[in-house]
Amino acid sequence: MQNQTDKIASKFLGKKVEGSDSYDSSLLVAVPRVENRKQYGIDSVNLPFCGFDVWHAYEFSTMTLSGLPVTRLIKLKYPCSSEFIVESKSLKLYLNSFNMTRFGNDIQDCLHTCKKIIIEDLSKLLGTKVDLSFLDNLSHSYKVYADYSNLYDIVDTGNVLIDKFKEAPDLLKTECTNSAKEYFLTFDSLRSNCRVTHQPDFADAFIYYKSNKHILEDSLLKYLVSFRSEYHFHEECCEMIYKRLYDILDIFSGESALMVSLIYTRRGGIDICPSRWSENCYLEDVVLLNDITKYVSYGVRQ
Image (cartoon, rainbow, N blue to C red; front, side, top):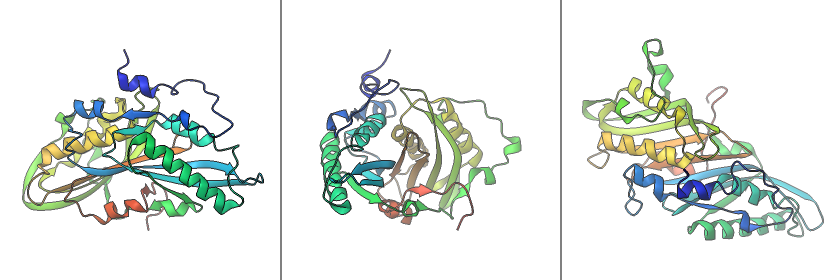
């Protein structure tokens, strides 16, 4: 039986939808965050983290009044404190409704008008301030995280047995250290599944923490793998991982800090990249989320 959140999210998901040949803001669907947060003891009024959800829409296209096509990569960002998230297929349908609609006398006028409309529509839908920028160079959205160590390079994978594929926080094991230490870790094989369509989603996970507790890397690897049969939205997975680590690391005390970023690959022309961090986290990477959120998984690290 579907719960209320799934009913809302499934308005378009898993269904054949024609979309619209003209701009249509009614296609947008807002999904409440609160239900999943309650399951994991996350108080939406007093969040244990700060953060943003960052979206890249790679296939936005519209036209000027003279019929000249204008195509750009859109970057959207809104805070995790918003009551709602935008459902992904509804956003795709909404952005596609711009395809055959004409705005502005020239390219700059067209983009300015579209930016204003999209910001107003999404801010109203989500009840929060939404930031939007157009990128005409894909390299602007990429950053290489050279300081992060892949768990596969740390863990002796030949001696790891993994047999849990539903989120299992009991897998996480820690040991105490003499002082607070920093850890920069990445895992490039995170898989979860859409809670409505059950289609798989793949991501690179980035985890930074500073604590006098050390998470044993093999236990963290097993825990992240346990998401392979979980059915959640991207934002929910990020918050689940954050909350589990937050609880075992005592992040609320002393010099401790935590950041979790999930950089999902795109599906249907859009990727979703949620990041959550503690208030005392001053990482450069957090600041740079205003400009970048994309990790280069393939090729040579710079």
